[in-house]
Length: 166
Image (cartoon, rainbow, N blue to C red; front, side, top):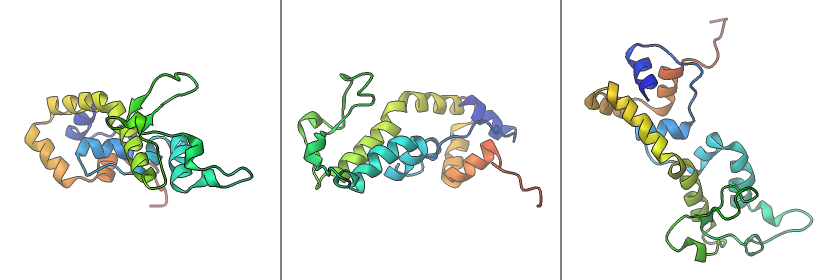
């Protein structure tokens, strides 16, 4: 957080500090995180879990499945192969609520929010504390109002590619 604040104050970029869109949104308090933001946080999880469920890919192929066959409940099991007993309910009593066609979009929203926000809330809080230790609160509030997540990336990290023809 302090590095971000110093880079903004001194107008220096940190090219190696590319942050996901979701993190930039959280730092700027720029609206809600969306399911699509998950693709920038964890592309594999987005492809193999989020789009798999939302697009109904489980019902395709030689051996089509139903959601009931997947035996999903409103819990997050981050690494079932490594930590099979580590589970986080997505809402109170979530372990008792089965995922159905009617509620799968809500399940995916809660799952993505837990993965993007809940799992890193302490770290994001520490980054915000670092920023606020250097940038006055009024100045940071103004930055949050006028800077978009894409602009924050440009301010902190600079251009990703330099066009030599320009």
